[in-house]
Image (cartoon, rainbow, N blue to C red; front, top):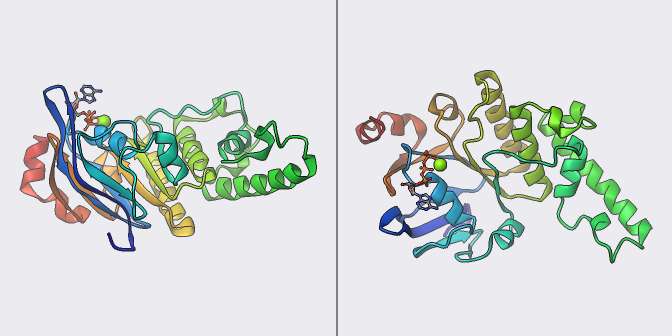
Length: 252
Ligand SMILES: Nc1ncnc2c1ncn2[C@@H]1O[C@H](COP(=O)(O)OP(=O)(O)OP(=O)(O)O)[C@@H](O)[C@H]1O
Ligand SMILES: [Mg+2]
């Protein structure tokens, strides 16, 4: 595993009873890239994400993150290492404001710890730093004007941005998303991808995205993996992959 690779998998296999959902899947994701995982329904994309994030244990194979073998670690341990999966349907605490939603997502939030609560001055300072960090993230996401709005008033697209903001607040180094623009209108869907590129540039975060809306996603990603019936069909730059006859056939 070279230094500019943040995530790689080796020979991942996952079965459900007799069904082989993942068959010998090996991929390698470059640090700071935006990578797309595409493939027809039932190809195994969501299963792949769940295996990488520790929700499912693979039957065989390995997952390496930042040079470390994370195979079999629990989801919260993987999350702590900076590999964060956002929810397909984002469910932030809807009664909290946008800013509060970011603050509760921060790791080691000192105000949350009962033991440390008596040391008020120390956590006041930490709290201020967290608020500043939250505002920086909100600015990058262009959500700063909504900071004191309750989350239930956000549109579906804004909710997805908020979910990304929460991942960043938790110091995510790599963010994995399952269909981030499903159900989002085309204008906002493009806007979401444009903001991802901005985050990648400003924070050097790596994105790994599953998406069916190829007409949107392919414009923004650096590299593409195509999964079909549990197997890696092909990989490469977006322009190359969409012209691959095997890919066209898999989608027919
Ligand atoms: N928990 C599970 N138990 C049994 N079978 C499962 C489970 N999860 C997924 N599968 C099966 O594994 C295969 C791959 O499913 P997966 O959800 O990973 O596909 P996908 O590529 O994400 O599809 P879609 O594009 O429709 O979201 C499918 O045949 C699915 O029915
Ligand atoms: Mg899926």
